Amino acid sequence: MKEDIKQLQEENAFLRNEVERLKDELVRLVSRNLDLSERLEYDVELHRRTEVAREIMEGHVERQRNADLQDDGQLMAIIEMRLEKERPHLRPDFDVHALAEMLGVSQARLNQLFRKQTIHRTPEAYIDNLRTLTALRLLREQPNYSIAAIAEESGFTNIRMLQRRIQDAIGMSPVDYRLMLTRDL
Image (tube, rainbow, N blue to C red; front, side, top):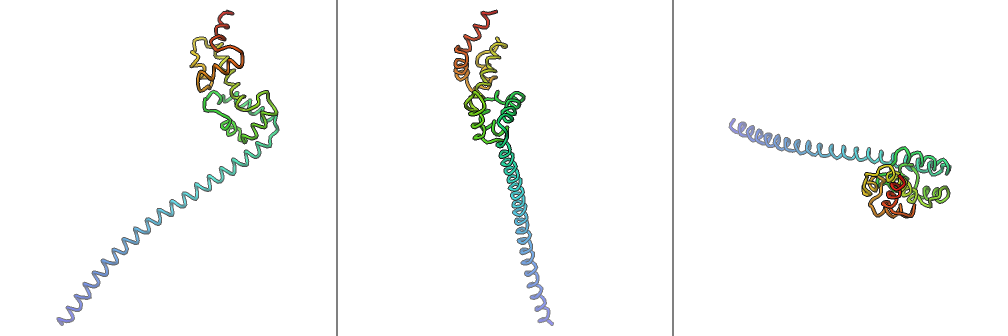
């Protein structure tokens, strides 16, 4: 009987050790399962984002392809309407790339259009002209504005650029232009 009790105690101790080992194994497996679940969620989210980006890119390429095929006159009218309505050229960071993005056309298409359709040989010259016209209007309509304020409100990055563009356009500096306007009053 003592031997039976001893044997039962040994089996009981073995089973307790086995239960502890299985508990540890269960904790390890649950932890690994959580890690794998997190990785799977990350992979699914990454796949979803990749698909969305691909769809956006395909749509952008398709819109750009379609816009590049537009008639020159129609595209120029769209440019003029959008710029007049939205006035993005008044932001110093607005450039040819931003114009192309806004219209959904390639920069090459814009360059081709401006060479053929306008007196401005480049889209950059067109944007500068819009800024210069805005500056001339502000010089007339806002005599209290400083030249720096006019440069900023017209979308020029600095005063020198404004002075150079006005000098090229009308043959006098912004200050001389303003003086000429006040003399005539």
